[in-house]
Amino acid sequence: MKSIYRFIQITFCFIAFSCNNPTEKNSPTTQTTTETKQDSSSAPTADVKTIKVNIDSSYNNLSHLIAGYPINYYQPQWDKTFIDSFNKNVNQKMASIENSRLSKIKSWNENNIKSNGANDTNFVFYPFSGGDFIHMAWLYPNANEYFMIAREYVGDIPNLFAKDSAYTSQYLKDIEYVLRDIYNKSYFITKNMSADTKHNTKVNGMLPLILWGAVRTGHDISQVSFGKIDDEGNFTAVNNHEKSNIVQVILWNKKLNKQQKVTYFCCDLANDELVSHPGNMIFMEKSIGANCNTFIKSASYLLHYGSFTTIRDFVLSKSNYLVQDDTGIPYKHFNNEQWKVSVFGVYEKPVRDFSDNLYQEDLDSAYKTPSYLGDLNFSLGYHWGSKKQNQIVAKKN
Image (cartoon, rainbow, N blue to C red; front, side, top):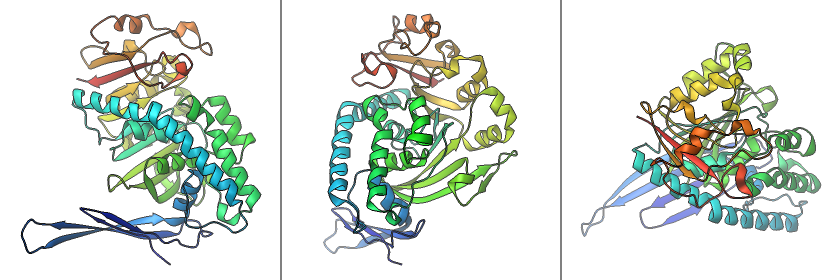
């Protein structure tokens, strides 16, 4: 089995890349990172530090393929012209949203984290996430671990290296179609996601979208592990996604030269469902770190309802630093003794898909106080059409 090697020195980076047999799913390779440090004396000496990083070449190549990056191996029967066109299209769309949205989100939150004294490497919790890894990773790029929860199935990437040209081309078209709302609006529309991943496309769950986002944020794929959470809250490994309600992914961040872990948990967060499946809450309690950084957006206002109080209280108890829009935890739950709250952008009534009863007068009033810290130069959330977006930053005292 061949290996992937990366040699990193202070002044330059040279990458030698070789590919395993791509038809073998889950075939790990070893990436060796060698760091050389030289002192300022005339006789050069070197400190060599070697880090061995396992890379799953199959998942890594598949993830790069669906993310629009050239790979080292193409099946001879594939439509290479179509794939080149797909790559160009994806890269154009990514350049657009990086310029108009993602880079601005990153800069905005970096400033807020610094001003709030929050640690940007803390555990990140993203309830009601769908497969939206990309916005979370741009918001919290330095985190050591990410935890995503949503109702959608885990899914998997099919072994496209064993598929013919028609199947592979259609799968790439389907990935782009499923991601249309992320590109255009910044969030997944629930009814579209349900139809797309169950009926309309070959994309069968959130893992392909998470791995797409991981590659687009500068990661290689080290390991993918499927599991099941039992009634005692224990993770049990299973051998495929069809038996799984959770997947754990180990990523290698090529920009930061460090590992990052991503967990995606398929779980209904309604009160009655958490009671019916007690192991889910036990697992979350022991897996989601205290004093974490939390992200909530485009969450259908579920945390406003009495049927989601358990997860609402859980988020408040676990979070140290929280970025959300008005679809997250209602403003009234952030009392002044426990939280410092800042508001940004423009607060307006919920979009027409949601009830006017969800309008928060106290949040509107906060925009007329010193809590208001300025406008937003990016669009993120339901008001993408008018770009009259709001964001709330809450830091626990």
